[in-house]
Every structure is written in C-alpha cells, then in structure tokens.
Image (cartoon, rainbow, N blue to C red; front, side):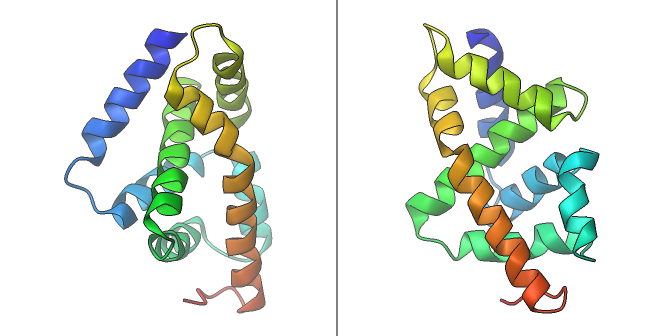
Length: 139
C-alpha cells in the first residue's frame, strides 16, 4: 500500500513540475470527472465537465497559497488513485481510506484523506456558484 501511494505521489510531483497551479488543477479535475457518479451532479446542473474544471481552476488559483496547494494536492492524489482503479472514485476513496488507517501511512495519504471533506465542500460550493450564475463561471 505504501509503495503505491509513494509511487502516485512521485508521479504527481513529476507531472506537476513546470505546470501552473491552474493547469495542474484542470488536469486533475478532468481526470476525476471520468467517473459517471462524480459527473452526475455537474451534468445535472447543466454545466459541462470542461467548463466546470476551467471555472473551478480559476476559483482554486484565487485561494490563499496554502489552501490552493492543499486543494490541488488532494485532487491530484484522488486522480492518481482513480487512474489505478479504472476511473472509479469509490474504489480510489476506499484505497485512500485504507492507506490512511495503515500503520505505515504516509504523510501524503494522511493529508489527502483528512482534506477530502474540505475539498468536497469547496467543489460543491463552486458548483452552487455556477448554478446561481445560470451555468456560467461567476469569476
């Protein structure tokens, strides 16, 4: 378990090198949105995945640096785990949860798991703001 999470973390660090925060967010967001269960709320709001990811990228990059980095790292961790589980958010979260409870849990796994609730709330708030703006990006 630890090897997998270290490998995912290393991959994400290498892929994010040279990327702006917005580009890193958009890439991870699009990767997470492959799961139909994750897409459902976005599509139900009459928003495309592409416009949602672009808009949330703008909102995330406007956050204070520590909050921005936490959101991006958490979403990237989830995207990496989903890639290992054929795009399943549920399977990725189960693995993240197990990694968090493991005796040899990595700091990255602990942080990602602990930050999932906050990230989920942020993502819901971003979608609510888009709904309130008629499906357009309010920023």
